[in-house]
Length: 144
Image (cartoon, rainbow, N blue to C red; front, top):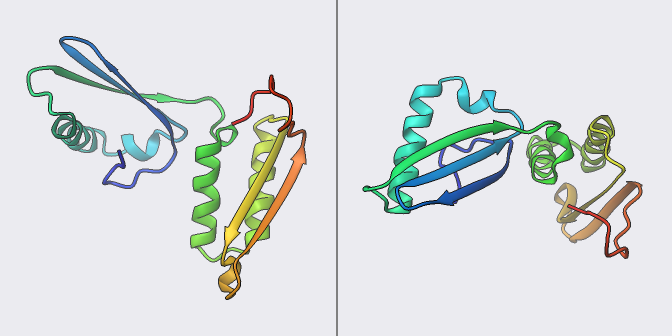
């Protein structure tokens, strides 16, 4: 489900359904974006979720949780790079900035791949950059 307000920085959303209660936990990197005008946005979100889940007889509880280092999470990092590319920043500069942010987040390794019509060129291509350890062949390695 996509938020209509376009709030960025959401890492993941958990929905726990019980008989009388539906618990929605939103894990965010930057919760200030949603909490600034808190009552109105949360009410609007609650109404939208209530309509989407068709649960008028159950109680709906929405909790917003902040995650520790947001730039260590791949979804938030991908949103950051997409935002940079929308703002017409050079793709190489955007990738290097993302790597810089992950180094501050204390991540062991990162690989970023951008594909498509890079910089508006007519021929599509794939560019990628890797920093640190990215053990793709190791089954036991935890990779996001």
